[in-house]
Image (cartoon, rainbow, N blue to C red):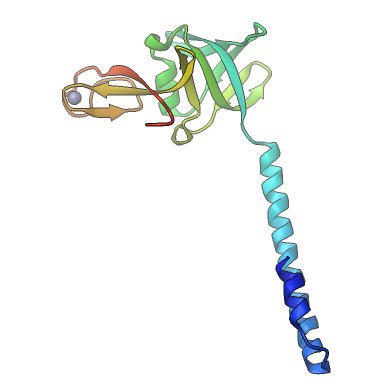
Amino acid sequence: MAVLAFGGKKTNTGKNACATVATMGSMRYCLCLVAAGLACLMAAETQQSVSVRGKLSVHEGAPATVETPDHKVVTLDGDTVTRKVLGDERLNGFEIEARGHFTAADRFTIDPTHTHPLLVRQNGKLKLVSYWCDICSIRAYTPGPCVCCQRETNLDLLDPDKP
Ligand SMILES: [Zn+2]
């Protein structure tokens, strides 16, 4: 669009026409870069996250699994924080929805924690997993003792629209 508008403004004198050609050339080069950039983005798009849904099973000493609606059992993996959350037995049996990608037909790696890829369903709504210390009013995204008072934090499922 910008290129068309730019070209339209040019006069017909020879000098300007040359300048236009040169400029158009470099602009075409720029457009190529843009196109290459878009191609990269689109390639990334095809590798983009998919979702897995189902019932979470937390296993002590082994990675958590999810049973999908078509009764496939998929082993879940993720970064350290995700692994800790997936080891929290309070989440056992929850319906979950996780974004990430399959590394094998029955293995799924969840996206990095900062993208909030893991949601659990509570009362029909998808919620973010967080942990809350009543005493210090501190929120955490990993289970375990409060960073401040060291008391065990409570599981606190958050509405992702108002975190
Ligand atoms: Zn505390």
